[in-house]
Length: 209
Image (tube, rainbow, N blue to C red; front, side):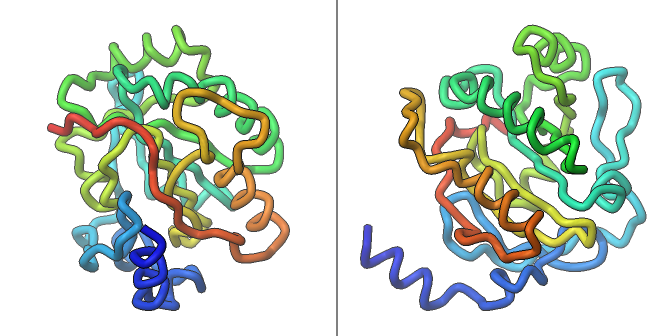
């Protein structure tokens, strides 16, 4: 495992760390949930990336990303114990960073997703942020998201600044866990590159469309 990590660090493009990889019609994506570089992918030339909101209306993800200094996307599943265990930590992150301009969205790319179900799930779990339906798992495919709890931080320019686990815990939560997502947000808000820009996701496999 350590040898594999050294190999990946050696071949990972420096552009990833400089934050030039973009989500949207402007550029390409080279991040994957397993921490290995993915093939470059480009969104279709279109002004919007649309998801479905709890009301069933179209949600303009591209526009939302451009409206905030940082946007956090967390991939959702109703059956993932890892994600369920992190509910309180995600709510705490929202409470700490939303006043500082950071947006949070859950993205449901699974085959049973619907606006009605996800709105009910958001209420049941006490999420202060919406769960958006990614029909056809389009956004999941573009971000190479394979696991629930996989988190991506995008800056206003739609560049991927962090991708991977919420922290170093799976289900059993410890006070000594490494808060990967929180660390990335702290670094970015301070004007620094994240101390760790990519970490292996620890959640359940997404049951995609």
